[in-house]
Length: 182
Image 1 (cartoon, helix red, strand yellow):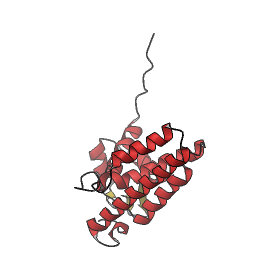
Image 2 (cartoon, rainbow, N blue to C red):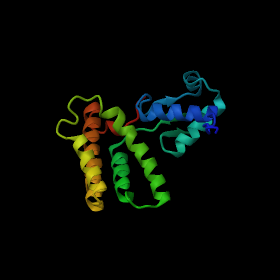
Image 3 (tube, rainbow, N blue to C red):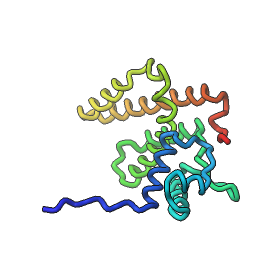
C-alpha cells in the first residue's frame, strides 16, 4: 500500500507561510516596511510569489498597503486586539463552518499580539495560573458543561488581552500601540 504524500508547496505558498510566521511571531515588527527586494533576499523568492503572498496577507489584515509606499506589517492597536477577542467570544461553540473559519482568522490576529508580547516577559503570568485556566476550560468541556466552558474561555481570552494591553502600554507609552514603527 502506498502512503499518500503531501503535495510540494509552491514557492508562493512557501513565501506566504514564512512571511506570515514572521509577522505573527513578531520577527517582523508592526509597522515595518516590506520592501520587495529585501523580502526577495530574505525568503529566496522572486517578486511574483512575494507580491502574491503580500496580497494574501493583506486580505488577512496582517499587512497594510499604502499607495506609492507599498506594504507594511499591520500596526498593533489595543482597540483591534479587543475587537478580535470579543468577536472570538461571540462565535465560540456556534457550529457554523463559516463562523469557525472566521474564528481561525481572529485567532491568527490575536496570536500576533500574544506571541511577541507575553512569553519573554518576566512575571506576566505570575498573577494567573494559565495552565490551570486551560485545565478548567478542558474539564468543563469534557464534563459537558458547555456554558461553564464558554464562560471560562471568555474569561481566559479577556485576561490575556488585559495582559497584552498592559505590555503594549509599558513597551512604548500611551497611544504607542496605535503608531506604526518606522
